[in-house]
Structures are given as C-alpha cells and as structure tokens.
Image (cartoon, rainbow, N blue to C red; front, side):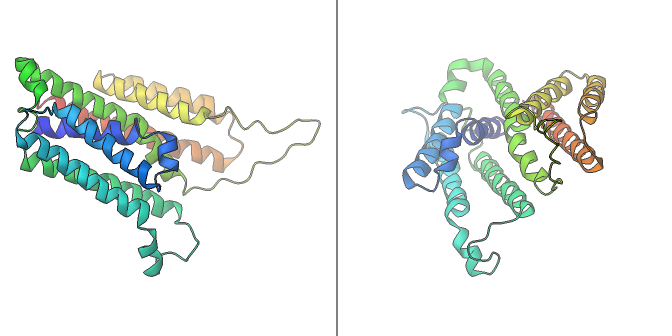
Length: 266
C-alpha cells in the first residue's frame, strides 16, 4: 500500500508543481487549459504506477480516482468563487486576504493527499500490479524509494516555494524609502533572487537532513543571517527575514524527515 501511495504522491507533486507551468496557472479558468492539467495529472499517475493496456483494473482504478478527484477539487478552487460571494464570505469584486489564500492552498493540497491515501487504501496492490514493478521484479522497492525521494524533494523545494510565499504574504513590510538623487535609487535586489535563494536553501536543507548532517543546517542559518541582516533596513525587515528563513528551513526539514520515514518502510 505504501508503494502505491508514494508513486501517486510523486506523480501529484510532478503534475502540480513541476509540469503545471506558469502559463497553465494563469489560464486555468479556460476549459481547454483546465482539461490539459487534469490530463497531465492522469498521465503522471499512470506513468508512476506503470499502467499499461494489459494492466489489471486495480491499476487503472487508482489512476481514475486520483485524476477525477483532482479535477473536482481543482474545479471547486478554480470556478467555485461565486458560491463564496453568495454566502457573504467575500464582497463582490474583492479578493481573498493572504490568510485565506494560504488556508485555501493548504486545504487544496490536503484534499489531494487525502484522495491519494484513499486510492492507496482501496487499491493497495496498484503499484505491485503495474508494469514497472513487474518488469523490475526485485528492484520494485528501489523504485518506491526513488518515488519517495522525488516526491519529498519536489515538496520541499517547489511546493515549499508556493506555500512559504502565501504564508509570508500576511506580513506587510513598510514601503521602501526613496533615497535622494545624489545617493541613487534604492537597490531592490535581483529579479527572482529571493525565489532562487529559497529554492537553493531548501534543497540544501533537504539533502543535509537526508545525509544526517544536522549541524551543517545551523551553519547555513548563521551564514544566511549574517549575509541578509547586514542589508536589513530596520526591525520589520529583520523580523521578516527571520520568519521567512525559519519557515523555509522548517518546511524543507519536515519534508526530509517525512521522506526518511518513508524510506525506512519501503
């Protein structure tokens, strides 16, 4: 059962956070783009389980459950804004606040995870009956371990990028002070520099936790603090850096620990 869950989780992580490109996210309300995303979800699930034309029904049933549930959940998220307006949760024409966006993101991913677990419970042998497990024979456990690491890495890095960004949106920073003409304009940093720093630091934490090098994580925190705090303009910016750093590191460490738990059981 765990192997099936890991395969479907890796497929979900790839479909939602690697293959769901920015242009898909921005145009997802278009029915054709929405259908394309769900097709990608189904395809990645089928590939992860090794579903083939001659595969038993249990394999395809797991793929169908994950794909259909993903479609329903995403449809409620993408097209279900009007019920919230009718219920008075939002004023017409308004946008949900940062806390509500983070809560919606969390509930969305928990719902997907719930159906992945349900599929693994209802069809526990879907992975074992797939083409990959059959062809690899005794190496099936190795493939499941690869799925665990792949899913954990994507969750730590790309999923973490979205989660941390939505979480940090609740903290509003004071407007940057404009320097005089002689001092020159305010340096706002590299374009996408913060996003890449986050991706790289979560990658480092994920790898270090899996390697058991916990002391090195403390060194990373110290190094980043020294580098970032010297550019912090005031207390609010310093606190913002601290919260973001701890949230990012904690997210990656949690993903790595969950990955280690799965690796010990496959």
